[in-house]
Amino acid sequence: SGYYLCQDSALRIINSWSSTNSSSVINNAIGNTTSGGKIFCKSGTYTVNNSIVLKDYIVLEGEGASTIFASANNFNGYIITSTASSFLREAEILNIGFDGNAANQASGGAIYLTSPYKCKLDTLTMKSIKGDALTLFGYDSSHFGFQNVITNCKSYGGSYAVGGNYINISLCDENYIY
Image (spheres, helix red, strand yellow):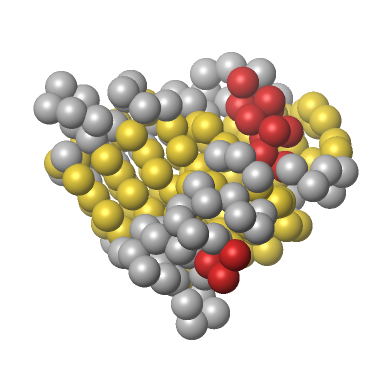
């Protein structure tokens, strides 16, 4: 169970739910949030059966490591992605923990952003990821990713990127990792 809040000009409760597939609820919230809005996920475990698809100028924020996006058994995908062949502009992912459930996955990862531009990833914790934990990927030579900021991201629980990399950056320039 959980809640999402949307911040446009004022913070307000949009919906609450109890679901075994949180990704559909979060994707619905993202789809109904205007540019510059924020989706806030309270502490809890959010089971993801399908990728959460981030869009331009949206902030997806949790309450830290106690807000966990967890891959469902046999999900075999990335928990958060962006639309392929298009820039992802100034989106933010903040204060979220990821549990990739590696023992029950053949592939996948935590975050895969295509052609990210000025995106911010801050205070993300990742464990038990099957594959790359965090990927920034430029779609092609016309859609380079650039000027992204990654801060305070780490693994915990003694395990990350089982069979992959912690951070994989390709066709992206001028990224800042602290």
